[in-house]
Every structure is written in structure tokens, then in C-alpha cells.
Image 1 (cartoon, rainbow, N blue to C red):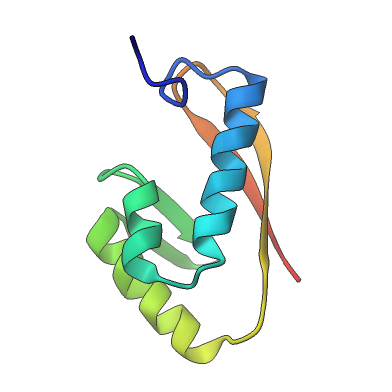
Image 2: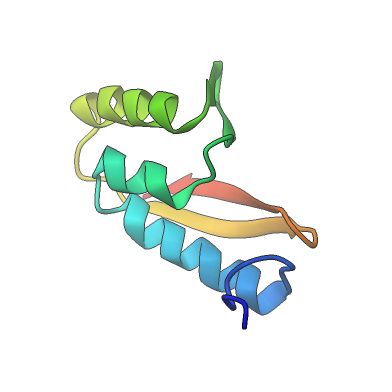
Length: 91
């Protein structure tokens, strides 16, 4: 039996995974957030490019040292059988 949140993804699973990641992100714990993503994750935040969990932790630690009291909202932008792309918005 496979884990229902592992690929291949359908629209429902992509939405569930995105909401779970949103909840973890809003915990503001860089170590926990990094574990939600694959070890080879690639991010772009404006002009900053981040690759891998160690860089994710470093990026989020710096980010949350400057930014307080916001909430991240994630929406599925597009998904394929084994990838999910999301759109970020801040409140």
C-alpha cells in the first residue's frame, strides 16, 4: 500500500498537500518547514534562489527575523503527476 499523499498526484491530493504545507509554513519554524520539501527543492523568492533544505532553513531564518505577524496563503497553481507548483500570497 502506498501513502495517499505521494505521487502520482491528482487535484485533490495536490490541494491537500498544499494546505498542509501552508499550515507548516505558518508555524514559522524553519527546520519543520524545510522537512515538508524534498531535499532537492528549488525556490525563487524575488531575486533570491534557494536550493535544498539547508538553504531553505537559512533563507527562512533570515526572512522571519525581519518579518513578523503575517500569514502565508498557498494555492495550487499547476500540478503534474509528480510535481506541484504553488502560488504564494501574504496577508
